[in-house]
Image (cartoon, rainbow, N blue to C red; front, side, top):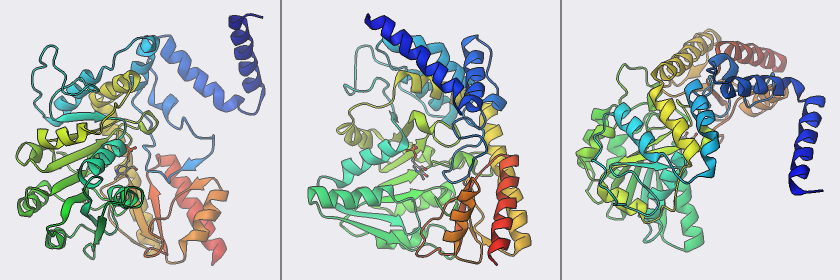
Length: 411
Ligand SMILES: Cc1ncc(COP(=O)(O)O)c(C=O)c1O
C-alpha cells in the first residue's frame, strides 16, 4: 500500500469513527462552521459562540470571552489556510492594525533592514506569541541575569514574581519578589509601591485592571507613579483586560510609552479578541526596553495567528459586542449578589470576586459536578470567595441558578 493511500484510508476511518461515536452532535456544529468558512460564507457569532467546550458545559472559570473570536478572524484563517506551505509572517499587518487601534505612529519600514533576525516590523510594538511570552521576555531581560527586586501587588496576577522566583531556583540569581499590600478596596496602593522601591529594585508590575480583583487605575494615576520611579526601574503595565473598562475611551498607559523610557505595556489577544489558543500578544515600549527584550526573543506568532489577529483588531463591532456581554454579565450578577447580601469587588475586568459567606472549595467542586465551572483564587486569604468569569446571558442564568441550588443544598 502506498503512502498516499494510507493517509486517505486513515482519514476516512477517522471521520467515520468520529461521526459514528458520541461526538457526532458536537462535531456537526463544527462541520457547519467549517462549511460556512470554506464556501466563503461569513461565519456568525451564533455558530462560533460556545465552540471548543463540551455541549452543556458552562465554563466560567478561565476568563475567556464567552462570544468567542470575531467571525472575521475565523474567516481570515480560512482565507490564508493554504498559504501555510510558504514562509511569511504577516506580522506587519497585525502591527499596523494595532497601531491604528491604539493610536501609535509607526516608523516607515526601511528596505532591507531588520532589527532582529526574528522580527520584521520595526517600531514600538513587539508582537509576541501570547502576552505570557512578552512578560517572560521582560523577566528574562531585567531579572534573570543580575537578579534584583520585583515589586508586585499582593493580590496581583503574579507571573513575573513567580518567574523571578524560578530563576532564583534554577540559575541561582538573587531575585526577590516583594508583594506590596493593596488598599482596603483591593486596588494597587501606588504610594506604598513607590515607597517599597530600593536601590535593588529593577521592576514594578501593575496589572490594570487587576486580576483577580478587577480594580482599575487611571492613566493619570499611573503617570504620577511613573514620575516617582527612578529611571532605571522598569514599570510593566499588564493591560490584559483594559478593553473591558467601563469607559468610552480605553484608559491605557500606551500613550505614556512615548514620554517615558522605562514603561512597558503588555497586551493579549486572549481576552477581548478571544484567541487564547492562538497565542498572540504584544508589548509597547521604548526602543531601549525593546532592545533588551529582543536579546531573548527567538521568534513569536505564526502567519495564521497574525492574520486572525489583524482581522480581530479591525472588527470593532465584535470588540464592542464583547465589551457589552461582559458588562451585562456583571450588572446581572451584582444585582443577584446584592439580593443575597454578598460582598463583591466591583470589577473592570471580565470576572468578579464575590464572598459567598461560606467556605467556597466545596461549593466550587459541587458546581463542577453540575457542569458549571467557576474558580477560587488566593484561597489562604479569600477562603469564602469565588471568582466567576463572564458568560453569555444564558450561561449567567445557569450559573446563578446552580449556585443558589448548591448553596441551599448545603445550608
Ligand atoms: C492579567 C493577565 N495577564 C496575562 C495573561 C496571560 O495571557 P496570554 O493568554 O496572552 O498568555 C492573563 C491570562 O489570564 C492574565 O489574566
